Length: 167
View: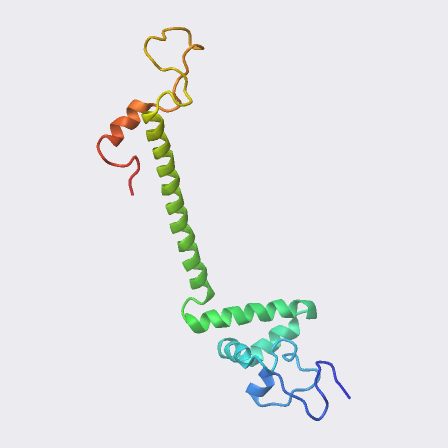
């Protein structure tokens, strides 16, 4: 005769929690659906950080449909706490945020360099896309296209051999 949870009566394989706690795993075990026997490390870490009694209380207080998410969160936090006892998952989040900040800075520098190179390219080829800029074209504003960038200012900054931005 089978019980809920897929265990046979008489030959019950206890869940990872009951095995670690060395207790009988009944058909109404709150841990069994979330801590299967083939994943003992999962409950071991949660037990080290939160304690079996606290985990049991948390799961009992939650509706059944929220327990899976709660166990996932506890497992994540417990694993992070084992790796970093002081900061836990906050340390991981902080590290990822620093990586994001560094990558955003690198992206901004790369984008600025692209703009700088485009300005230099347009300065090298003044007739490319801007129309005639010769001084002999002294006519109305419609007969002479104005450059998009102020090339004198850019030229002065780049003539020093330094980039337009500083770190």
